[in-house]
Amino acid sequence: MKPRIFPMDPDREYFFDEGCFINELSNSADDAAVSIAQARVAVGNTTRWHRLRDTTERYVILSGSGRVEVGDQVQAVQVGDVVIIPPLCRQRIANTGNTDLVFLAICSPRFQPDCYEDLEPA
Image (cartoon, rainbow, N blue to C red; front, side, top):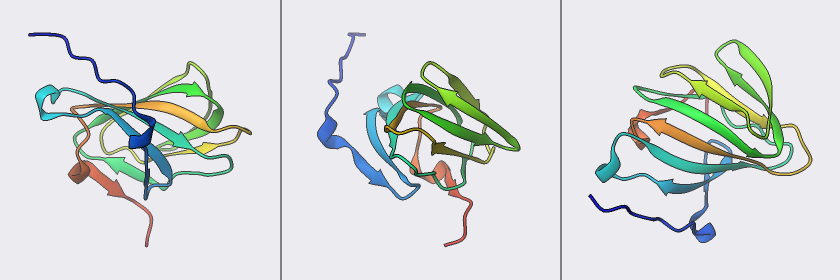
């Protein structure tokens, strides 16, 4: 198998209804074991309560600071922190700093839209 390199393209970033911006860095059926997305939460924003079915998610905080809520746990997060979120565990993250909160969202198996559950009423 040959190595593959996927250049970062900032123009692929899109707003996700959860309340953050997403840039899919690697999410392919060719590598179904894992997906990697860069997420960005604007200053003062909090994502919607949600959970993932059959998928473990990891946040790796790259810049900014925030507060993550996973299940009944609430924890401040900063650059370098890693948050591991088991399947079906409710979660949300808030930007408590004064710059964008940017993190990698690493999912295994890879993220697919049908595993996402919004837990807040419309």
